[in-house]
Image (cartoon, rainbow, N blue to C red; front, side):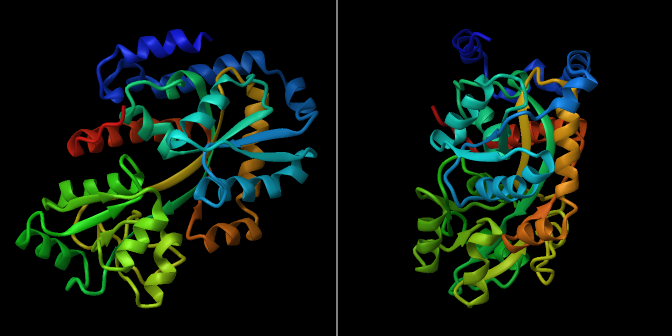
Length: 346
């Protein structure tokens, strides 16, 4: 594939990315890709794979949700495959650097990408130019896990639940300040989605990562944040922050006492950070079948489930087609959030 040529073509298209014709047919594209891969990937390919170590790219720094998910999967999947899976971190530019590396890798099953909603469905709606194309360059393998966010406020804010927060925000439009881990981050977009659906106005202060954003919220410099559960739950349980709700569709096992935003009055609200394995388009179907089957088995292991639960995440396996359908839906979802929030990154 001529990456430069495709990048130039994509740069000339109007945004949002999702409104383009390719997204509407992504479910069909996944099915076609898998059918073509089936013709190329014989049973023999599945039987002989893998014959050497596998690289699992992570487009973020060690310690984050994507890195942790990759290491849990690699730890339990390597013995099953009989080959070592090497986790290879390539952070930078909102995940675009490592993701582009995966897109350019040979489609032979020896380079995997532990993707997340950030680089797979959010970035295409934020950046005018990307050196990869989600719809053309990747084939889904399986979802792995979902990490919900939690709505936290500084204890000085007189809101004990989501309804009280909404009432307070409506009484003081534009006065409440929320922190995020950066422009275009899932944390910002989750808060903007809450603003839109609840009909409230709050000011945004972006920080360079979740750690400084949490620090400023703990200090009371900002009053509200929607961080990933592992980032803030410990502070909340120590009484330094007040948790109002969790952003998942259902209550989570790591904190079953927390209500969801949806059940707290904002119907239909659901957002989180998901992770899933993708491979370069054209990877043989036999290889896809083997990888998906092994991921599915790994995610049934009690020790793997416990590892994910310890970081506030829940396992979430799928077929390639189910993952492709989620990508289609999420591209549409984030296109609307980005448009409503007016977020742009050049």
